[in-house]
Image (cartoon, rainbow, N blue to C red; front, side, top):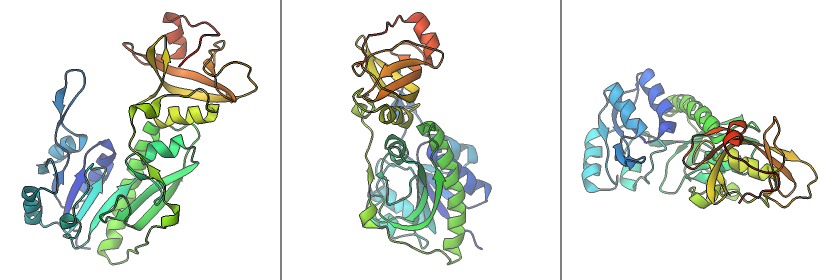
Length: 312
């Protein structure tokens, strides 16, 4: 098989295993396209995207257009003449001029079982909504949002304690392996295209700050799923004495309660119980503004919480 000339487009850490695997398998990556450097952190220092740093390590040309639809970038793209574009969490919508150019098309790694969870945050919403399975999809991109034909798909169980961070890393590696298999099928003419079932479409909207705010009137399981789905970042949160309290790890305890939702119970070796609508959420790992993340036992040594106090 003659390996196609690839233009790789990606930005965050999710894209790294795919680029590493392409490089390891000696696919000719003609250039890497990623988002511009952005200010981040307290000092607002300009930081390069993870994909840029890896590309520089591999000695690959890096392009950082503000918008890929700009004529100047499209001219550069045409000069590169890729046989295939590979996209992994790039962060911009591709125009028709790019989608139609490569002879093997534009392949996208999407971390869900399409048509479920189209959109910006599929890994988070799979967990938040209590799914018991998920997976990765390699699709042939079109002008819609995650609406292209499915080329390959691979399912995996979603463990009941798995956090966003853990699932993110697992699906990134799974997607990279599936990508290599799919590219071989496409180049050898053995790939089959399956249109997405429109009746099965669900969405995974972009996360906003309000997404992470805990409503203690929800069930204990729903609250724990929210905590898992946002851990370690951006993190679910509640309020303690007016300050945001981030919660990274918790477990549900379904039992009869008589306390108002949000009421703190008596701490034990298993954690700090907080009343939900149908039981308790046992807090295990937290962080209050200005302090580092710590186990709940360490937190309670420095922050006095009395049973009956209310969070939120």
